Image (tube, rainbow over all chains, first blue to last red; front, top):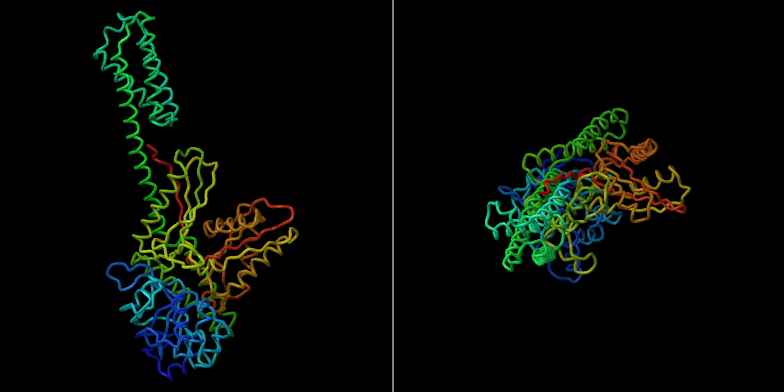
Length: 172
Length: 406
């Protein structure tokens, strides 16, 4: 079990192996289908992104409504495979890791290996649990997407498992 | 029953009016109320009962009774009684009063029934988003203990099995937190799918039931803090409806007496893995097992395993798909009532376990929590096989509405 502060260092990344359980503390970006489509379009057009993704981790998620006295509602991961077409481009542009659930394509495995990054899986369906690990949330861009907007979360002891490590070894 | 009583009452009331209208004046002289008040009261009562029992529009009932009353008045002189225009007026006022009161009563009754039904839909959906059925919780626990046991026999796969156990442990912890914090266990609160079985003694219209389901779903979605996961149209702008509506509703008449509504929250990580295979009619069990296994294998770790699998067999292609959803309504752990289909369910489940997808897709020894089959007659030339996959958060609930209807 690793307890790691974000952003991840090169050493952190190289040290992690598949099946390693990690508790992440720090800042992560949140975005899924539409956000990915838009970010990659901006990259392709050579335009600036709404926020820097260099060294960042992105979590594939869109939350349910926020209960009173909580920071965020149920917020478990969505299926990563839908983001496969976009992940290599984002990793080329500096994204270091993604958090989702389920398998990734070979192109993503290659991108993770080529960019010395990682792919973590979060525990699918465990939205209530993850809600208790979020200390703060901030809207960054694409508010028109409602729950699918680009956000930033401050998380503490956010539990994930390494599914693809920096050597390109995959659990799937 | 109530309707029969009302019909008899209407007829009886009408006969009484006829008798008292045509009886000689002397015999009715003893009646307590003033003549016009009696007219009004009698016609009001009959109109009230007739409006409630005939289901005709208020205007039609009013006209019918007023016309009959006028005719009686016209024929009264033939029986030695007198024609009085103001008797007709009193009759009409009575009829109007009776019909109006009946309509108000019906509206109040409908509102009370509607509210009751809406509440049941709402609480069923909210509860489903937070709690799993007992049988499913037990199956998750079984999967943990069985995986731990198998881990002893497969030392080379320790990492995968440990990850599987971790996933199952997190699921249990998640269920605990969902319960404690009264919040949705998973953020994908899904699309609302309803199966309505209308019994033989249900006086509600489909429109009224549909309104109740919409309203109940809307309230559950708001109060339960569900996520708005529905878009208006699937291809172009895909604009969010911002209500998580509409619900998807299926209707069937049933031989039971009462109304039964079954509800499920269908998340789309798993729904995206659902599929259809049109097999040859000679495919038999082996073909079915293989077809289902292929679909589950293709899904892999994407539908948030461990999974619950609904299989629809027979009908036409879309009917098989519907049956596969109906199969997901089955109580987890309850086999098909026919032995050979129950056996086929078990065979499919055993085959799925050999795929070793496991919780979270980490390669654990167990993947399926349950398999249910629903079948219907089909064409001689085919064997439609539809599979609806549900993630472990197989959220559903149902209730039987016995009234009140008054």
